[in-house]
Image 1: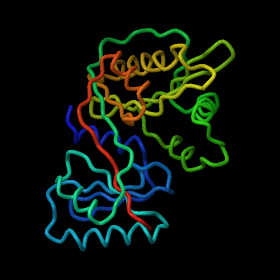
Image 2: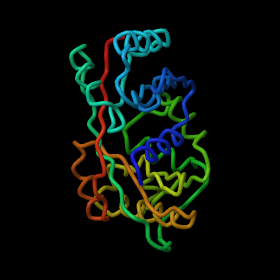
Image 3: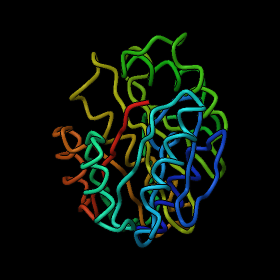
Length: 243
């Protein structure tokens, strides 16, 4: 499993409205929802015209009503992060990308698995995140466009859906996203159950390894993933400028 493969599968899992390239840099924009869908990946060596390119990227986002945002991964020249810092771009959201091998498929009780986002799945996610449905139109549109093969998993509690998450398979990798549990149902094993069901889906689709992304301030999630056998492969973070 490589950083490049994970970045490709992650980008495919979150379809964006608009994408273009400037040299090796990939610019994405998508209604302002999701940092990944609205950021630039400044891949490759530092270009000789880096200052002009930064100005062009900023202008591209400002025209779309967005602030310029860069995702800094190990595929970037380290110098770009320093240049952005010197330009006043703020550091945001350090993320750990964690991986592990997948084993054989297993049967998991107490979950529903669907190739589309069901009403119960959407309601569980929004309740878990504390977000009003009227505010997440771009998120709902993105979820509806996630490419196959995909599995939307809902873990059932005593009084209805309690936890949710989805997984996408690409390039023989399973990417796990949006794992969340309703506040009233936390610490009852629902996140672990969702993960096991997603692992089973990935194995059934022929994936040999799984990856996920978790913000480094989410200690409970980090603890769970380490218990499930995940190790950190790499880190990335964002740099945001002013619109």
